[in-house]
Length: 144
Image (tube, rainbow, N blue to C red):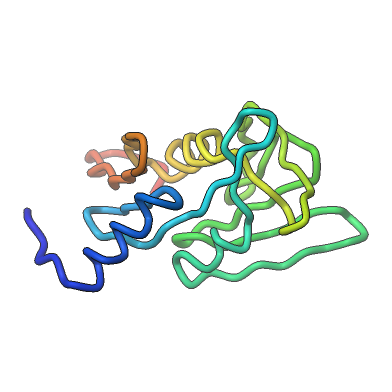
């Protein structure tokens, strides 16, 4: 199903191609993430993740953890740890989070792979776009 492309979304996509990665969920462009290379890997700040889908962000300095809501999922990051909690279940991003000047930085590909697994979505990656598509639930799927 094709969606109508507005001037705003076209300008937004052109801007995103120059400076970051476009995130698409179920054929709707939800935003762009500006990435930063750290040790040769692409990372992005958690504040961008919360901003993308109108989520929230809460940092607990004593526990050194940050909790973000994104597309209905509660995600908890720990500093310098490759494991994250998504809705209470642990997932391994493959690379640890980093504490940088902009705040907590998350590995781009590792995070979205974990998010897709945790939320039963299919993920497709190209050089400048990450597409998340909700999978149809099968009859008898007990996970809800």
